[in-house]
Image 1 (tube, helix red, strand yellow):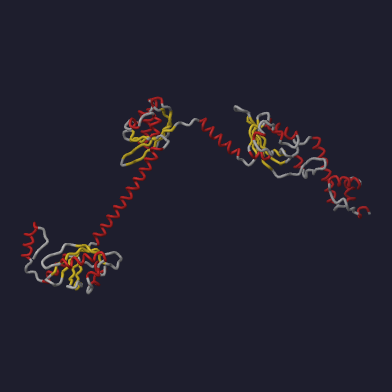
Image 2: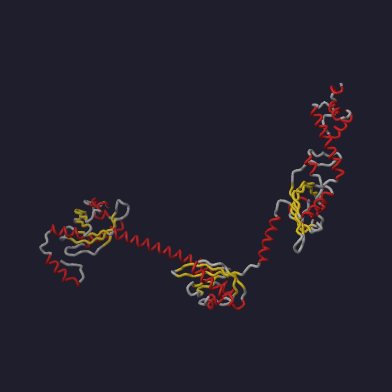
Length: 481
């Protein structure tokens, strides 16, 4: 019997052959079944005649259906040349080299098996020994998936590190990375290098405290101590060394690669004037975009600035057309009305809900409600006005125009109409109300109404005509009867 065993094992093989000499066929079959996962007996035509399985798992793979079928038909297409090679190389007294083939499985996943073959006799049957590689294939698949996952994680970490490096290098904010244990600078971006006034290689490795002025050492040491103890620290104002100016230092703690580091962000302290100016500019933009008219004048009531809504009210196209002009030119029904507004503003400092009118450059008249405030302090005293359009009300003046319909409307005229006109209009209002009440009581009997009011019928008709009360075309004949 020839063997493919290594030469170093030839003596052990000879001893094994000598001791197994008396082994009968039944014992040999049991030994083969116990030593392999499956064993097949193939006839001279390549058909499976016998099959022995060492585990019940192979029965679920449909291996029992191989009996009576050509062995080559049980494997996948790419494994058929290997089956042909095993059958061709099988010879008496020699074992072929192991070959891995894949069997078609009803589970949908191929069954990998490693085979070696030996012909029992010349031109006789072939004994095929197989080892199930399903467990090994599963381990290989798991290993491949793990390697792929590690590769994806590695690529993701590489991408994140690249983005971090890019942001760190191109960021406009000066940033230092400091080792929390030693306070040594481990990384610095170009913005911080320019702010400190040193090359990057001269900053890395330095104690972070040494980059600042000596007067700030105590504050910085307290900052680092607080970070190590609580993980938080308030921002502080510090001065850089070599007269590089004041900066605001913001520090935060983070862990990386089992080490604790501190991220120091340096920023120039923003002057209060700059912040206030920025806020003022934003407020001015809001006022300019208000849908209500807004205008600012000097104490002499000459326009300094006005928003587009005010320009629409006065029918002008540009701010230059109103700048320097007196606000009195556009507001008030009479001169006394504007005077009353400014007198109240001068006395109380502010005015709210003042009803008046705005006259446009081309004759339009718009009812508005004015709110105003006087700002006497500051570098330039000024007065601010907002003008909100209101629904039109009935005019309250004499001379053929409609009179007020209530006492409330009459009181609104105080300050806008002279007292002489106000008394005259009040008298007209009382007469009209009395006539309407008398006609209502007498159910429009004008003779009885005239007697109730102490007037002649001709006097009652005159006043009714004056105030536009009743139907004066038709005469009530029953009254005169």
